[in-house]
Amino acid sequence: MGGGMEANKNKFIEDWGAARENLEHNFRWTRRNFALIGLFGIALPILVYKGTVKEFVSLSL
Image 1 (cartoon, rainbow, N blue to C red):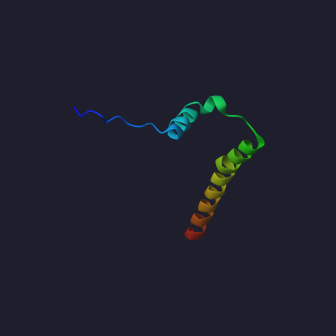
Image 2 (spheres, rainbow, N blue to C red):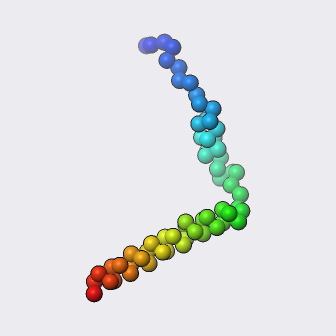
Image 3 (cartoon, one colour):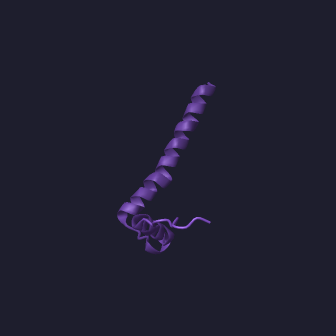
């Protein structure tokens, strides 16, 4: 149809996409990663759950 409509690739976006595709190959367990997973993957959901249950119990009385 129309000529000259090529898309210009952004090097930074291409690099980010490639890093995301290979994340499982490049991930390393470090103290920081372990702490972040423990905090946001375990502790925060437990605290939110406990707070929600506590609020429902206090409202039902």
